[in-house]
Amino acid sequence: VIELNEVFSRMIAESFVSSFRPVDFELKIDNDGKIMPYEIKLSDGKVLKIKGYVDRVDKMELDGKSYIRIIDYKLSKGFKLSDVFSGINMQMLIYLFSIWQNGGSYYGEIVPSGILYYSANAPVANKNNREVTDEEILKAKLKKSKMKGLILNDSVVITGMDSTGEGVFIPANISKSSVGGNIISLEQLGKLKNKVDNLLKEIALSLKDGIIDAVPISNACDYCDYKSVCGWEKGMALRDVPSFNHKESLAILDEMEAENDGMDG
Image (tube, rainbow, N blue to C red):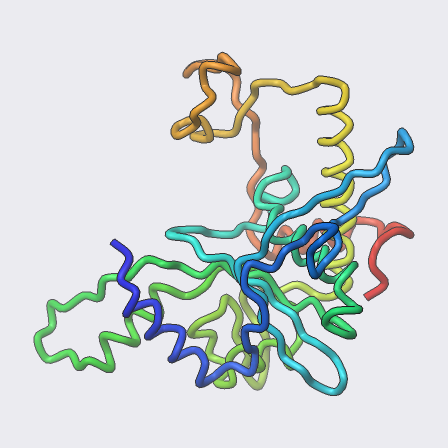
């Protein structure tokens, strides 16, 4: 059950420690939107154009730059960087790359600062201890409802999202000695963009050639309304999705060669 009061309480609590402020809701990425479609040139000379809507765009203005993060509201959603290497969970990154690539005339000089999934569920706090205070209950709920996603490895960005540096609301934290969490450097983000672009090229050309194999990932068909169309049934082949932790995924990115068509940062 979604409890709006819980969600609003979290938003209010976060606003006290964040310098990022919502500037757009349901941002349209399209020819007639505020942001033009994301375009990728294909090897056959055609152009792939991707459009969509971003639930929420937050901005922090600092030193003439617009630090941009995008937020998606979900009942339950995690984020694993290694999934992107297999073409999964790319939507939010594509939206961020769209704004990074085409949003300069609208937002100004952009620093892509992160993607975040905001849980719309109301977490349940353990009330076994009768002496627990309302403040302690709220703190426990905030911890359980921390946003998932990916944050730019920049102390300005991290403290801009959480002035305490504790990472109560975001999947990143900062202390005097280190920065931790689901973080990524600007150079790595550029390499990730190249990886996503290449995956999108492969998908587009495969669809164009009619190559649509019914080899889903595990559990992907459980709630699909089109199972009767593809003909996949339990026991048939599944697509393998290699899993790596965040540190391992960043190491893989570091090994990737930056391509000339990537963002310079």
